[in-house]
Image 1 (cartoon, one colour):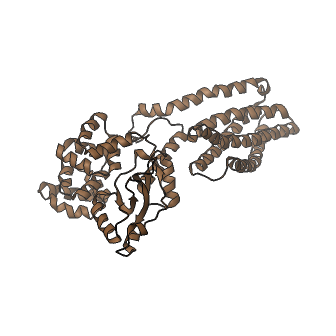
Image 2 (cartoon, helix red, strand yellow):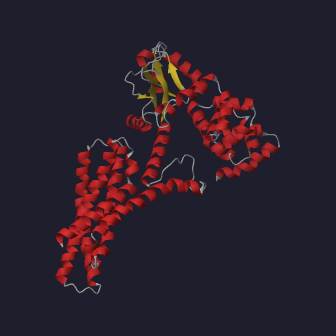
Image 3 (cartoon, helix red, strand yellow):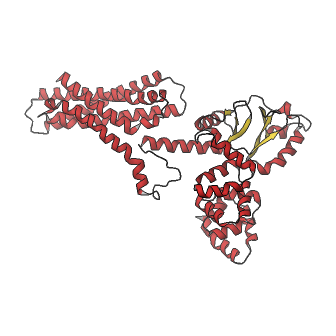
Length: 456
């Protein structure tokens, strides 16, 4: 909101042709804040202000502008201006920006890129969107092992304007193989004449370009890295993944898993719930719901098979939805916790996690069976049924036992499914809340009716 106060002043200075006076004000701001202030202006006004900003700051501010504003700006700017902006962007930001554009617009912009930038896009295109090679940045600092500390600092000063980070610098041999890295802190503290080869660390933590993006985020987290070097099959340095990329990966994966666990399918990139078209929302949400509705035919068939048992017994019919619903919730809880353990790389084995979940479910089963027993007594004594107290207590105990059995079975099923589908190389999140609920409803009905048949 505080940026709204700047907008009248920005427009007044622009109207008076004093956009140069805006530079000191904007330079005092973080590029993200400057972009937020500029986003409220018209495209010609934004272009006028960006044209007077220092190149590095202009690049950073442009990267924080809303995607729609970026696209409108480039479409309204001249060819020379577009080339300057695109070629000044960091490699990963440029690739992400171009990916968001319509194919027709992207095809017009790509030829304006430098040959190195075009080659970078081609390399990225060889990887899947969820692989490290698709989003790494090639704007990293490289040092020669023979440089002295003084010479390395001077070299970093030369490279810094074009690099995303210089806190870590990487040392490669003549073939481009990664042989070490050195931090800016170590360079500053080292004697001026000491060579980089003696300062650098050779136990480099790296990741393959074809690795999954989640693995990169996990390595950055586990080793507390600012940047993670990426190498090809021959150990040659091809890029880095920075800590802010890791945060984006975590957010993206969390959003993806959240939607899968809610039974939402399809691509949601760039979508906002309020602005996304209704038909697109329908296409993403309806398939899973329709599939589960069809799956309920099996559950209904199971219940129909016990029609003679349920006929005339209002209490059994009234308490069955409660038992099925509780089983479904317990199964969903177990599934969600298991998926979380898998996603965070838990060192525990499947057997250990399943054992733990069964122990927890047994404790819950004791409490929930008592609740089911009390509910059954209240329902039966509150009605007009002619059963004696002994018969009522017996039916209530059977319902309580069915509840306990269903809870334990649902917990074991919910905990097992994610690990089993992971063995099939399927994303466990796909078989979570909706799918587990449907399966536990089916098995819950079966367990309930079998227990009642055996015990009554």
